Length: 497
Ligand code: NAI
Ligand code: MG
Image (cartoon, rainbow, N blue to C red; front, side, top):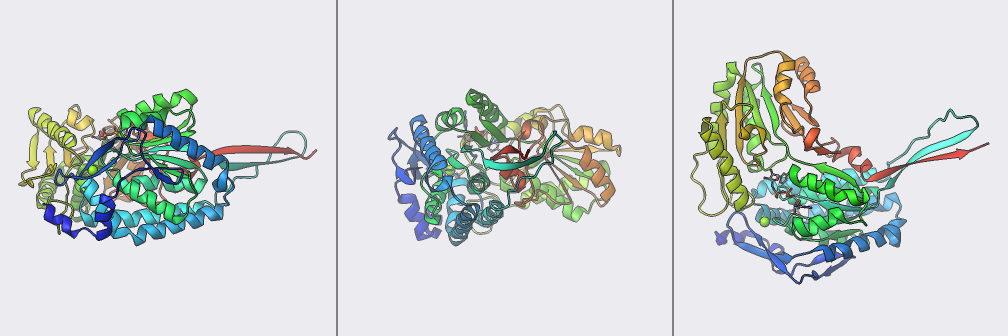
């Protein structure tokens, strides 16, 4: 396995070997705990680096630095065009270092290098999109009806110091989705990456300094959720916390935020339905539905994990999706031609395997999942659970692995089909495959989810807002909405006599 590491660029090996510290106030500093923790390559189980274990004491320092940068220093008075310029510079650096960042992403998270590479290109697009908004966050002149003569207007002001807590499934993209709108809006940030995947956040910290962001604008504290993460969510000096991860931890974040009523945005779990109608272009729908669940080994909040197929095409669709899954090549992300990497960790693998066993025990048919797994690493083969029922745990709970729950439908009553789609505590995403656009529009309206794709799965454009209804979260990422959620809205009324 280790022979694969000879493919790493010299700058990647050099980065891995550097002593990793915390980024606070523009400096790389040792953690107060003086402890470090192991970073694992989930494709081999090998320890590839050790990073600083930040704790509450470091969060205090990082929040104080972010507060100073927000209230004094160059950021406090930064012109919007200056923020645009810095973000554009960062986008350039992300592109320049694309190969290196992709290799780090693959090592840290396990995903195939080609997939990681595309993800890095997407981060540059996101930064550029948000960079443009810095100069376009206009308010409105508001016509008042009160007696007298008035001039009234609204203005967006940055919410202040923001704590950002991100997961491990798309380490660099998640950091960028959080940082770019916050910085465009003029906030300062304390970022805590997931303990499983801290590497690219640290490399990003170096690039942020290189781009020229002033000290304290972005602070990065690696550490564990229950310690550094909890301290950040509860901190009285933080004006807003933005979180992506499990619904369970999301609820803890809300409780932690109560102390100072900080603003909260949450991007949480999902159990997203995909519907294939009998008139759909199956040549597109079958690989579409397969990728919806198997991409990134199913470790995607918006994974299409519940598949509803019209009975007329059900058998064919299921057999083809299972066959599609079996053709996917599992392996270490640095190997050529690999389609799927490992899951992020042993606990995640065990969790996913337990769900499959639970499905089996409840009598559902298991298709696929028979590939020979690589010897090392936390691999799970793509698996289809056929003829599942709405009351099963595998259908109700987020599995976060390459495991699809499929069910046939006979109905063409949209209210009843929407009832199936909406029979979940989540509401992040839904997919519809049909050639009948009237049906697609009517069905899309009836689905309680933040995103709906028709004849496509997950359209990840920086301009398109993304987020959840119900227990999939609060607020939106991407688009103008993301920026506005990093702002307070001020109303100013001037008495003109
Ligand atoms: P998690 O939600 O606990 O972790 C995500 C982030 O939150 C990490 O940075 C972690 O350090 C931090 N965190 C954990 N506990 C915290 C606390 N008390 N206060 C503040 N921050 C805290 O997710 P975990 O345990 O890694 O995965 C468990 C399950 O969560 C997965 O199987 C999956 O179902 C779901 N998940 C969903 C994601 C999504 O994108 N919606 C991403 C990752 C996990
Ligand atoms: Mg890792």
